[in-house]
Image (cartoon, rainbow, N blue to C red; front, top):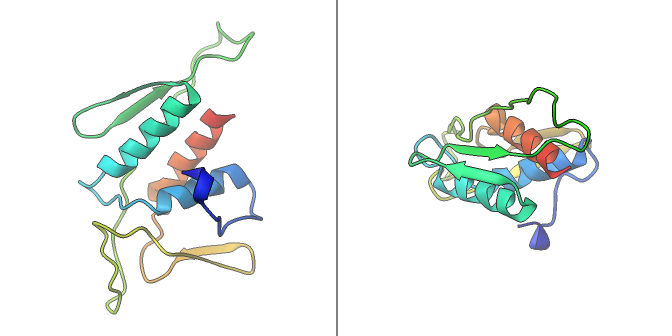
Length: 135
């Protein structure tokens, strides 16, 4: 995914998290349409060498081993959902089954989707978890 992507969000920190959010935003992921986002997350886990399982309804579980010296510390569980609220302006031709979101940024700090909901609930949690897991 990252090899060919030109990122819109370049100067907002945490940069890695926002890059993952931008990638996620390109994937249609309304409720009941989570296969593609689950594919993306499982591919991410595979590339990072992380344990990953997925169930029949596209719930994904990823486990990362403890950092050296922390093997006996209690585990931390992070959770979020991959689907998004799919609402659009009356004049929008956006198709939530096939189209990724068209993100816009203003003044280097205001992010929104053009004519649709942003998918921040809970896309930002998924992006944050991916950023944490990639570190």
